[in-house]
Image (cartoon, rainbow, N blue to C red; front, side, top):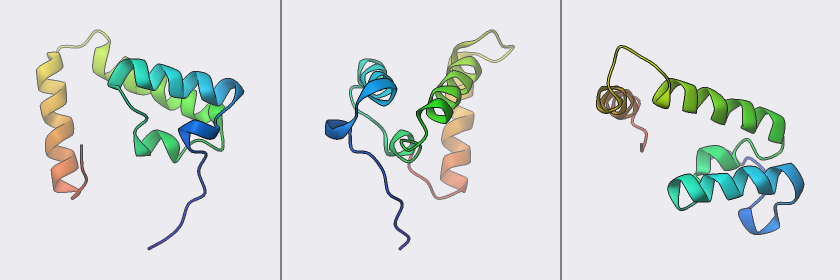
Length: 81
């Protein structure tokens, strides 16, 4: 299994800590997918903004439909969602 160096939540400082703190407020924890981007907090921030825009922004699909699509795609890719 490959190893990717990450910054654990208890070691985060500065902008990364801010991103992690927001993740905890949103979801109650820092997801692994966010920790994988921890070495570049600017990229992490941009990724989170993209996710929020896609999942919470104006759209012809309901939030439930968007979540269902994300769940099905994750299942097809054998990923936990």
